[in-house]
Length: 214
Length: 214
DNA sequence: CCAGATGGATAGTGCCGCTATCCGACGAGG
DNA sequence: CCTCGTCGGATAGCGGCACTATCCATCTGG
Image 1 (tube, rainbow over the protein chains, first blue to last red):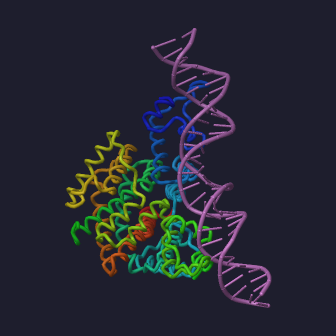
Image 2 (image 1 turned 90 degrees about the vertical axis):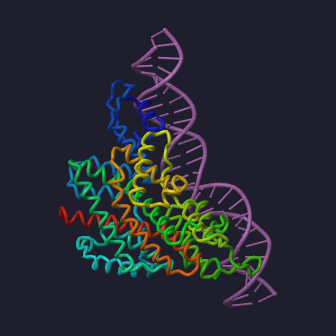
Image 3 (image 1 turned 180 degrees about the horizontal axis):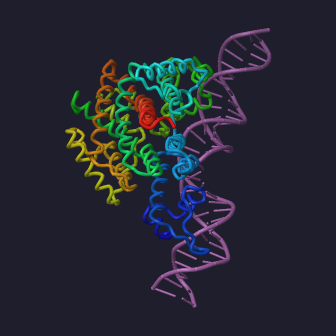
């Protein structure tokens, strides 16, 4: 497959594919001669993942490059590869330490983790980008006047834990670490939005049941 | 409160506040004379919501304006106000009807709704932006080679339905429709990211329990 | 054998969320 | 009463970023 066919089958313009090649998002094809390169099915697949990252996940090109580098880099263990790849994807806001709401938010998050018994999350604590962005988000909600304490979050956290168990069961069906990391990246970019859509649909459904469609 | 104080208490530059006033994201203050306007606590609160929409929710300015218009417009019933406001917030991708994966995705979504017994979601069907974006997302996952059928989604949908029940219980504690719509908008922009953070944290926690922190 | 595609390089475009600057009109401190 | 800082209002410009348009020498396929 050459550039034109890759473009046609992916729906991405040749100019854009060249741009991705330049930016290192896509590995160069197998060089046939000075003016021709051959691309395979894996290039098509990777190109689709790149498009999903950038267009659906709104991941900046530089972060997408880093995340994909971790997908391909098999010199690390699974846990580190997963963490490194997912940390490149957009997170919530950084907490504003000058804001008193941040301290209150951190206290609630710590209480939540204690109640849930999420020991490893407590150990990692503020080192984890996810933990930090959670604190930042809760602080913003508090500043807007919406209560967001451990009691409120706990039942949601239980639901998300159930979802996480389903996620890991699914991940275990893949043999290689590379496939697992790619699944994790694809899921963060495409399956989390699926969850969000299901959530909003469920809200509409439940609202219709309680109040009617009027 | 005048412009400078509003800027200081919100952490938003005066130039940016003026820009939001120009764009109609923020109601003008009460005019004292030709060169002075007075702002209240509600302006501060609305300004913080605008920042959350734009910076955290990455909502384009034009959509944020529309969404906030629906929050303030009490000429409609609650259901319509909720729908109109939330439809302005970013959705997933539009399905590509030329792609055969789209048809397969639509079939799976329809099967899912039938299995779950979500009757009103089935009735609204493709008219709902949420339904359309769900189809688009599932199609992308299928094209990437990840199975995403009704059986896989059903347990996640049940979890999201449980979350939706919690959401509506919370919404019922607010008296006025305006407060309810504002809660829904704030939740879509700030609480959905909280859920996402809890989800990722739960994944890390569950992964640590199954495989250790190595 | 020649029209058209290819890889490679470089400069330019369009969008969008701000931001810098200027202006004439106030108004509080001295 | 003066004056210096701030106010609101308006307009033009900036910066980042994901592309995109153009050019070129080099192949390829009918």
